[in-house]
Image (cartoon, rainbow, N blue to C red):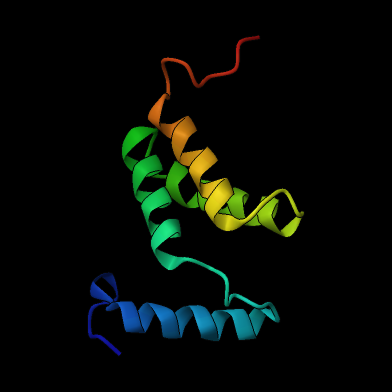
Length: 92
C-alpha cells in the first residue's frame, strides 16, 4: 500500500472498497468510486467539509433502501449541494 493514505492510487481504493465490502458482507461491485468521490468533493466545497462524508453515508443508506442507484442518488445530492444555500434549504 501507499505510504500516505491521503495519496492512495485508484487501484488501492479499489482494493480498500473490495476489502471493506467483504468485511461488511455487502456487494460493492456496482459502486462507482469516482461518483462517490465527486459527490464528497462537491458537497465538502459547496456546503461544508463535514457534510461530504455525511452525504455519502446518506446516499448509501438511500441506495440500500432501494431509493435509486448510487449514481442517481449522488446526482441528486450533488444538485442540492450546487444550489445550497440559496435554494437548497427547506423553508419552514
